[in-house]
Length: 226
Image (cartoon, rainbow, N blue to C red):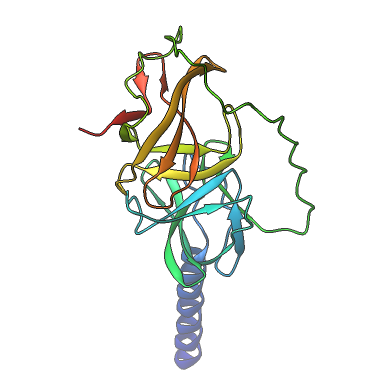
């Protein structure tokens, strides 16, 4: 009889232990972050225009910028981990490059699982003239212009988007201050849409030509190199 009760007790202890392990394996909700939609093995992609693949959780070192428009996808290796923000972080593999991505903030997802749902059609952008006025003037509501043709500049904040045309939503490249991205001003400023001061520039490393905005109010998004 004693042996039977001892066996039952050991079996009960093993079940409790297994239950604890199983509970610990479940993703934990991260207060303030969107509910997790990714798990280990999920194939995912940027949910917005782009997503940054970072060297570590909470790191400012960007290994690569993944773009939704070019069909970039990655595989989830680990996660979610609630940290920094708070955000749900995932260790992922993008074509052999391993790093970390964040899932989103509030109700906004920055990455999403890949589904078979057809992508939303991208509206055709109306061509915008790329020739600036001969005599640039101050743009009311925008910071005072600090750039001109020939200026070497950089992002003034965390990043700056290099766009395909003036007032375009088509992002050609994302320049990061932490990566020491710089560009040369070719033309501008042009006052438009916001209002903002726009400049036609050439990215130093990739040689990509596009448009950047200088800032809004009293905040500069790009700045001349010191």
